[in-house]
Length: 193
Image (cartoon, rainbow, N blue to C red; front, side, top):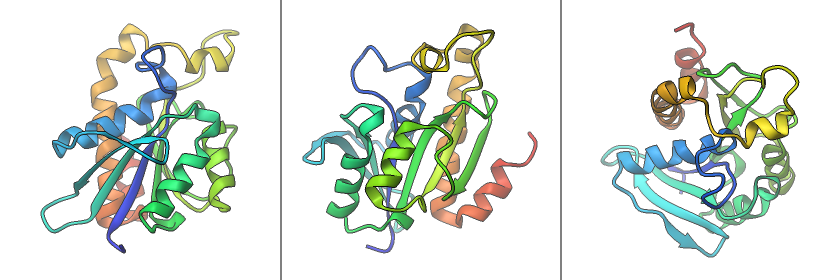
């Protein structure tokens, strides 16, 4: 399945976390599914999966929202990759990133986890850090607020006004990686806006 990609949107399950900063990865895969009129269905890998194509005759996208909490994202991710016969080079993980300003997207493959427990667990489960990450900036908390509390808060009013554009841009970044490769996507999304 050389033209199949697994796109995992990280987040926590349940309505309590649905619109929080930590769940922006799931918001992005929701956008990708919406663009394809694809519905999420339960999967035995402890996830909800929607399938669609990048374009007619293009690459297949397997869009996944995990039913597990962020810190244990690795098991469901590796089980989905095995189910679809995909290596880590065909896995794209979309996640929130504290060290990137809000409304900014950065892409990379490999490297460290930057303290992100979901990314850490996936790298451990896949036995390699060499998968693509679409890092969606949420910025650092103001003042002395604990980052662990910040990521579990809902976006502020000013952020909510821009959030649909950020989610759309991150979905565009995923599509660009699949269609044109990581370097092309980096050139497009790392450029000043």
